[in-house]
Length: 180
Image (cartoon, rainbow, N blue to C red):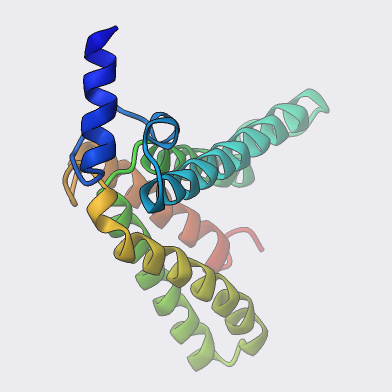
C-alpha cells in the first residue's frame, strides 16, 4: 500500500519520469494539473483508435457471416486497418515515443500520394488526402509538443516495422487503384 503511495507522489512531483508499463489512464488518476490533461488526451486518443480497430474488425466478421469473401483484397485492407489502429491505440494508451515516427511516416506517405495525384490531375483525390494530411499533422504537432510525456524509444523495430508494413500495404491497396 505504501509503495503505491510512493509511486503516486513521485509521478505527481515529476510527470516527465518514464514509467514504461504504466498506462495513460493510470497517469490520469495519479497526476494533477497540466500533465493530467495531457494524459487524458492520450487516453482518449488511445480509446478512439482501439474503438476504430474493433469496429473495423467487427465489420470484417459481419461481412464474412453474411457470405462475403473472406480472402479478398478488401479483407486484407481492413485487416491492415485493424493492425494500424491497434498499434496506434497501444502507443497512445502507453504514451510511446515511436508514435512520432509512426505519424511522421504516415504524413510522408500521404504527402507523396497527394503529390502524385496532383501531378496526375486527380484533384478530387488530392482534396480528400489533404483533409487527412491536416488531421495527421495536427496529431503529430500534439505529439511533438507533448513529447516529454512520452516513454520508450523513438524507433522500436518490433512496433514500427509491422506498422510501416501495414501502412504501405494499405496505401498500395487504396491509392494505386488496386481496389478499383
